Amino acid sequence: MHTPQLFDAPAPDQRLGPAARVLRGFALPVARELLPAIDAIAAASPFRHMVTPGGLTMSVAQTNCGALGWASDRRGYRYTTIDPETGASWPAMPGVFDRLARQAAEAAGFSGFVPDACLINRYAPGARLSLHQDRDECDFDAPIVSVSLGMGAVFLFGGHARTDPTTRVALHHGDVVVWGGADRLRYHGVLPLKDEPHALLGRQRINFTFRKAG
Ligand code: MD6
Ligand code: FE
Image (cartoon, rainbow, N blue to C red; front, side):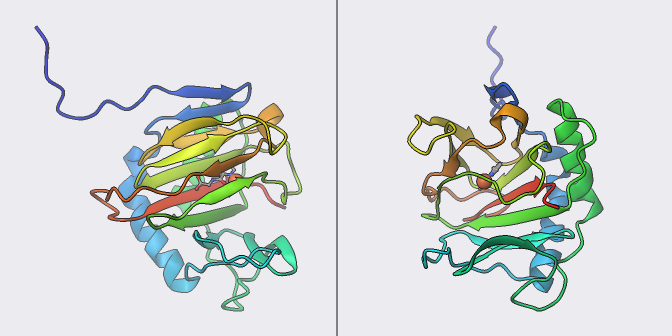
C-alpha cells in the first residue's frame, strides 16, 4: 500500500564534480541556532550592498563574521580584518558556524578544514549573483563550504572559463555545498530569486560561504 508522505523528502546528495558535493539538509539540525546568531552578527556589522570595482551596486546584501571578511569597493575585492563600515573588527565566528563548516567539509572528504572567514549573503526576491570565481583567498587547497537558508535558489555551476556550460542546481533551506580541489576555481552564480516565501525566514535567502582566506 502507498504510504502518503507528510514532508517533502530532501533531494539526494549530489556530486557536481570530482571534488564538489551537495549535502542535502546537512544544516537542518542547527538551522534554528544559526538564525539568532545571524541577527547578532548583523547588529554589529549590518548587511550592506557593496559596490563592485566596475561601479555596480550588488543586489545581494552582505556582511561577514570571522577573523577576515570579504569586502568590495571601487578599488577592488579584498579580505579585511576591519569592517570598513563600522571601523571595528568583523564579529567573531560563532561556535555553531565553525562546527557546521568543519563537519560539512569532513563529510565531503576534506578533513582538517579550519575556516577563518564567513561571508554572509542575503537575497531578497529578484536578487542575483552573476557568474564569478572565488579567487581572493590565499590558499586554494582549502575547500569552500556554502550553507543555504530560507527561500530556495537556482545555483549555476560552470567550468573554468566564464563561457563554459553551466549546470543548474536547486538549493533549499539547510542544503550545504562543499567544493575544493579540482573544482575550487569553477565559475558559479545564482539566478534571480523567485518570490516564494519561506516558513522560517520569510522573503529572504541567506547563504554563508566559509573559507580559509588568510
Ligand atoms: C550563494 N555562493 O549561494 C553564493 N561561492 O548565495 C557562492 O558564491 C559560493 O555557494 C563559492 C563556493 C560556494 C558558494
Ligand atoms: Fe562564490
